[in-house]
Length: 83
Image (cartoon, rainbow, N blue to C red; front, side, top):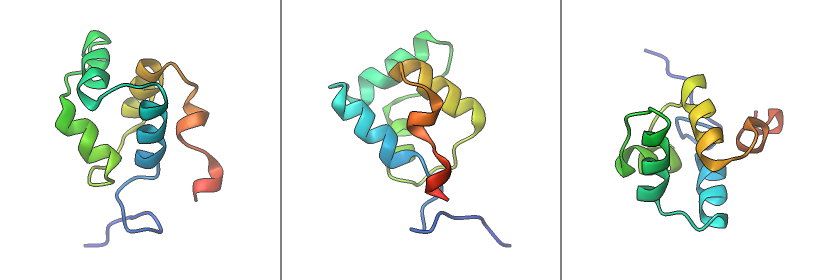
């Protein structure tokens, strides 16, 4: 079965940007997961790792929660130039 992948072979376009924003804000993966949990999203730091490493597909719901938890607009996480 055909699977859609990013040009670099990962399962998402936003993992690297999420990692960069998280590190710029001096948040650990665990702290980011905790912030997302406070927003009602049941995740752990393994989820964050898998997204950042491109191992996990990311939904639009995931993007919204990441943007809220990181306190950035979605456009900072995902842009048309990534395609």
